[in-house]
Image (cartoon, rainbow, N blue to C red; front, side):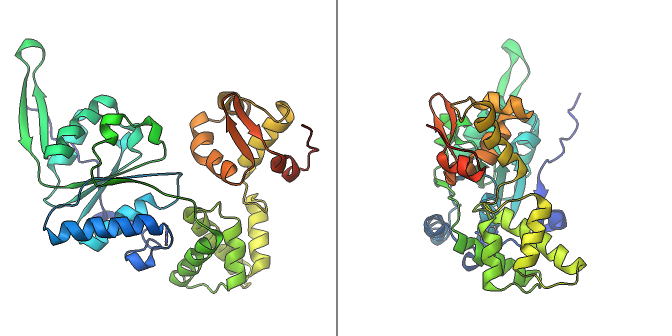
Length: 335
Ligand code: ADE
């Protein structure tokens, strides 16, 4: 009996762009603010491939969420005039899902796999020959009568993103021959520039001082900055006010975000370490259990920012709150 056709678990941006918020994503190198070293490297990599009429090699982006990994993939597709197909590690459940995605690619396409660390190991192995020699090895049958057939794939570029580099196997890591790029947190000034650019697209007036005020509470992260800008715009609109510093203060108060940009969960992490475990060291799993949260959420979403701000430290014996964290929560610091 023939297998039923597999659904293609990718999103075609052209057909379904409306479902992805593309309005604020930059489509030109000059509109992409910050990450200058990565931009310089990518520019050369892509230009050199174009001059040789070759397909650009596979690229891996890693770093905390919201720093623009998907945005870069989208930008690369725009700048190289190539079609991008978007999928993610958890969406690819079976070997057949990935086989179907790969065989449905057109020559020159970019395939973007977000959260690639969540790809199952036996599915991951299909990717190796696909990345190395654009071929797909399919095993037909089981046991002694099983045989492998090889399908040739069109040339394509895989762009993958992960927040958890350490979860990627080394054979997979080594196959990103175009390069592995770590996205860094943005400066307040870069975030303020992103806010001004987004404000002009959204047609709201925001002055220099106000955009810097939003930037300071944005966790050095464009996604958070754009989220806060939109929520401030909502409040200004509903209250028929300007989007000024006062609106920003009110909006952030309503969202439970403090002067350092900490969310309620960030503060709960700090107060758990400080109040329940005398400032640490305490294991991540213990903190997660105390807060009924998943360790991976705390590790991927909250910790990078808390560490960046110097509020917690990772030590071999667990997490520790710093003197700055005690001060921020107004708790007396004792060594
Ligand atoms: N949106 C997300 N990341 C961005 C960046 N680096 N520059 C401009 N807009 C962005």
